[in-house]
Structures are given as C-alpha cells and as structure tokens.
Picture 1 (spheres, rainbow, N blue to C red):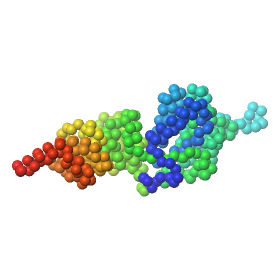
Picture 2 (picture 1 turned 180 degrees about the horizontal axis):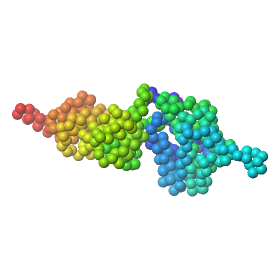
Picture 3 (picture 1 turned 120 degrees about the vertical axis):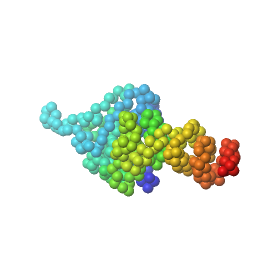
Picture 4 (picture 1 turned 60 degrees about the vertical axis):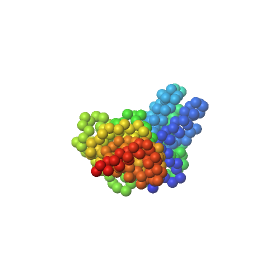
Length: 370
C-alpha cells in the first residue's frame, strides 16, 4: 500500500507508535511536566488498521509503569455537532448573560493519581464546523470557557483522503496544531499483539502463513467487506464462540473479510488446522507428523511461498529443509527443486547438509530399484 502513504509525514507501525508515545508520556509524568506541554497527536491510517487499539495499549502501558489510573474518553467526532463540544447555552442565575453547560467530555478526574486520555476519533470524517470546534481543544486545550485538566493527553485519529472513507479535507489551521503520524501495517507487531491478546489460534496461524491477507488494499474497489486487523479480530471472536470450524460458517467470515479471503481462510481451517505453522518450522520448532495427501498438496505451496519471503535468511530456510526431508518423497523433491531455484547460496547450503546427503543417497537407491 505504498501509494497510499501521506506526503512529508513519518510512517510507523503500531508497536513503534505505542512504544514511542508511551515512553514520552511516562517521561512527562516522572518529570512532573504538564501534558499541555506535549503536542496533540494525529494518527492517520486506513480503516481497521489499529489506531484505536494503539490508544488503548498506550493507556495500559502508562498505567502499568506509573501505577496511575488511566481513563480514556472516546469521542467519535463524526457523530458530534459543534454545540456538543461547546455545550448547551443557558441563562445565568440573573438571567443577564449566557453560560455554556459543560459537555460530558470535560468531566474528568483531576487527581494527581489519574491520567486522562481524550481520544478524538474520526476527526478527518467530521464536518468542517466540528473540525473548527476542535481547533481550541487540540492547541489551547479549551473550548469556550471549558478547559481540559493538566492531566489530560489529547490524541486524534482519522482516515486518509484516499482510503475511500467519509473524509473532509483537514484545514491547515487545524493540521498545523497537530503532531502527525501515519500508522503502517506491520505483520510481526500485529501477530505479537494477537498472541498477547489471545486471539483465536487458527487466525494467528493463518495470518502467519498468509501475510498478504492481514490487510487487503481496498483503494481500487468498492468492497464493503475486506480484510483488516480490525476484521480479523472480529473473525477471532466469531470462531471463539462457534462450535463448528467448517465451511458452514464461511458466510459469517466472508461478511467480515470478503468472500475471496474467507474461502482461502476456511480451506486453511479445514485442511491445515492440525499442521505445524511454517513460521515455527522456519524457526526450527516445527515438529513433524504425517499429513494427509490433501494437506500435503496445500502445505507444499504454503512452505514454498514462505521460503520466498525468507530467502535472504538461509539459516531459517535450512531449518525448514530438515522438516521437508521427512515428508513423502514426491512432495519433498518438488519443494526442494523450488528451494534450489531461489538462490545459489540456498542450493549450496542444502547440498552441504548431512541430512540432505543421507536423504539423497536414499533417493538414488530408490531410483536404482525402480
């Protein structure tokens, strides 16, 4: 999705963003500096890329490291009118002047033992009038006579103009008040997060073996359902609460990630549910066990595709060869031929393996008998 990147804005994955901002906010707390001294953050990214998830993880990190209670005020600006931010006008007690009732979002705990995070989500999707009302909040931390407490962090998020979402161009006056960061997809950081948050094992396994399926580029079509980190989290919840892992639930999965990816995923569930992950195999941890013919047919393509990704890491490729040599002869030969075409370095490393020399001698004896 390189062509979607914003101009002149740093691009970081979720793990990098969470770590950088968590460390910065914790440093401010430890040094007794007010959060008003730190610029408001603007996270840009495609729908479902993990912007909201990153804010929740930042809150958890601050709470774990400082012992402070962290409260997130999640404001979906797309659903707001300007008056919702300013408050409803009413007469003062003398009925001479108008005063503005404080909006709910400004009712925050001001205790030193608490950190508040005001999360202004979908800021790029709201009307220009609401964006204008957000000017004061992001820079001056006020709107009208209402002021954010010193223990409040401000983070905004939204989709980019070319994400085919409901987006209004951000005025320069607002954009210049924000620290902009673009959220990029990183498979490894998402898999780490998925394991830490106990996502369904088969979802993690599928994405590990089919990395292109984590996020499907929806820029050039009008698909309503498409794969993203958010929709895979939803798939995980469906699988956790569904008794039957079979093609019968394919429509439910397709309604989240789209039909093409859903068919690929469901075939993987049915055929590959019991085979070791290629990631584990390439890390030298995959334990061999006999597979069915159908599983072998699918597995040979999965492991060859993964070898293409890891072709610059010869040690990992050799780990997988140790597994392959235990497979039925025809499948092992088919895979090894593809491996040797990846690079001369891989070919030489395979031929130097003691296990390969033993296997090759057995192959020669077999051919002589035939």
